[in-house]
Image (cartoon, rainbow, N blue to C red):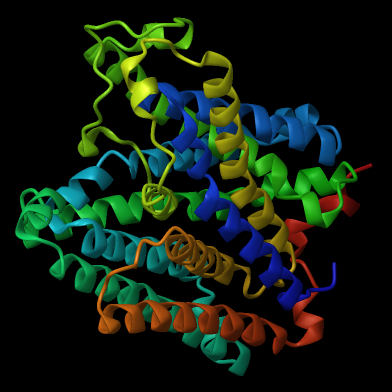
Length: 411
């Protein structure tokens, strides 16, 4: 497939839009605890949507999975498990550093490690990337993206400084910079494991091409395996919370039990650094909480809860559906930059959601300028990375290594 970095950039923007928007349907879910609606949506995110679109858009998906070496399947699956574990400490990051600083630090680690570790491990940083103008431009774009995430953190902290003392204490419960930095590092690196899983899934992509799947859809079988790992982590955590909170009955009950807790402890929420911006934007929406009449009623709208959870879950999946499409357009040499494009796009659309939902109303002119600068820097970083990819030599950009294209070796 001939690389087309700017079309790839559009796909990554669509993925960012999906990631920045997926939490909004959850705001219409009533009388369910977090673990109930998260796991319900997760079944669609991590199981149903990957298999449905994988079966529909690729050839012989079950055969591709069964023919993949067990070592590859296990490695990709474990990276999915580790990615899910990134959420175990994300809530603690918010507790120790506050939402804005904590998210900026975790996202920074996720963007940096997810982008740079694969080419470093492969030995390509000093052989393919740094010696070329195109590689240098791409790396500059990565640095600009990290700067944009830092500016987003500054905007958030500026907003927090303008809050009342009571609101500040609620926002940052136990500020501890050293402890928060350690927790954010763990959460950010674990969240980057999704990128490592995609990089390790090369044999799966090669096999699906052998079976006749077009390049554009060749990343979809990999998602089936990675997201199975993510489902494992999330399922175990939600099962634990069901046991702890007595909330497992909610899947079938049309009424709320008076002894069951619907409250949500921020540290119990299992979401990775890539999920959180979408939630924080959605939480600013006005008019999406239950009305007083609904709150007083014990009735649970089961049909609508399942519908909105399914919509949220499928929307979440589409971030990586478009990610795999965008990756195929970036060229072999610089496809590692797709992770930065994804992270930048998430932040762009989450920020736009925040503006649309009036999250920044009432803040100072300085804070609003920082928000505008965040958008400008992040959008600029995606354009720079796309431009850097377009500078790659055409011959090198369109050729796959023999190991990645074993079609001729099969009868």
